[in-house]
Length: 197
Image (cartoon, rainbow, N blue to C red; front, side):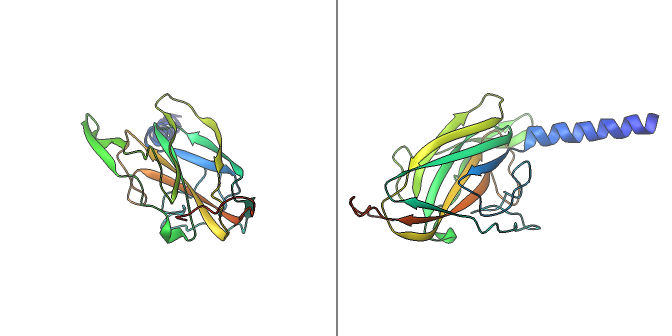
């Protein structure tokens, strides 16, 4: 009985530590390009998720969208952490922007991320930055609509990342978690083509 109680206490402490240290999110819409578990893993590596041990299993999902239209983006924050989200779009994964650079602060738990610069007027390839900023303890659904540039782009990569404040960082992804979706964009011929993409 005593051994079982100790094991339970250790397991509970590990679960609490994981909740305090890691944030996770699932990409619900558009469809993710890799299979995600209940927490949204694997999602550490830039630019599109996976880990060094598990690059992720491709879903083959592609979302068709017309340039100039609004695209619904829905994520489920499965484990809380303060911070914000950013959405970017590129023709290839290696053309996506670098993760936000964290400014650091000294805490009683050691060095942790304090904040990261947010693009107030995002330029390509960033579509929106500083999305859903929060420091209240919550999990659940975040939802928005973003305007897709009016371009032709087959198999474009839509990236959603979560920057985590008050975090020690981790080897495989620094201070961000990553998910991507593949989108086929067909330009609307009635609208001007967006430059810079």
